[in-house]
Amino acid sequence: MTKHLTQKQFIEAIGKQPLEFQPGEAWKYCNTGFNLLGFIIENTSGKKYWNFMSDRIFRPLAMPATTDRRPGNIITNRADGYEQTNHLLINRDYDLTDVFSAGAIVSTVGDLAKWNAALDCESILTAASKEQMWTPAKLNNGKPTKYGFGWFIDSVEGHKNIGHGGSTSGFSASIQRFPDDKLAVIILTNTDEQIATTLAKKIASFYFKKAD
Image 1 (cartoon, rainbow, N blue to C red):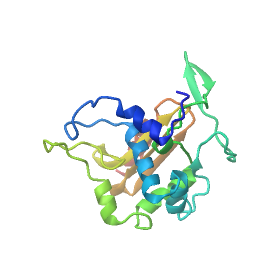
Image 2 (image 1 turned 90 degrees about the horizontal axis):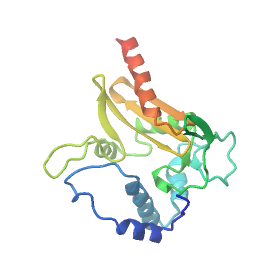
Image 3 (image 1 turned 45 degrees about the horizontal axis):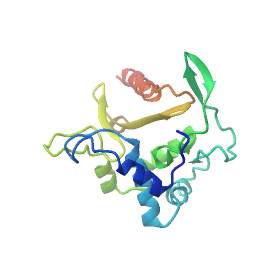
Image 4 (image 1 turned 180 degrees about the vertical axis):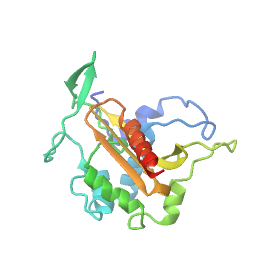
């Protein structure tokens, strides 16, 4: 877990692993795909991943608190993360493999609210791009999955839900959008328990009940 691989080392390491299934025959979430996308961004743009993200998203949307989570960076009010061992909280271990474009990011609810607002217009992405991003992929047999381009597409209590959650050592986060209700719930926690998405959807259910 303490390896910090270069792009070449990363691709060589995963290339040795056998396929779990043939492309298009099944679907499974995997961080590896997001790491590969980060490398593709670097190779096609000629920029480091974080510089590209800053130039294309963070600065245009005025998201000053959103950046690379590297421990060496001085980040005002950075939250400490906590892990659980035998039901006891301990400080997270910072000496971990860099998950890179699969989630090595810090942000705030305020910055993520700006990102969410940008998804409601075309300041960053065109309507055609968002439609493609939020359309569930289909398998070779025509059966739809519940995943688009980096977003889960589902429903909560009959309300259309587009969102994603995730966790790393010491942290759990989620953004859940309900476009028909003009509602978005963003949760950031400093625990490795994967609770953020559950909390976000529960909060949304309170909203639905009140709206009804």
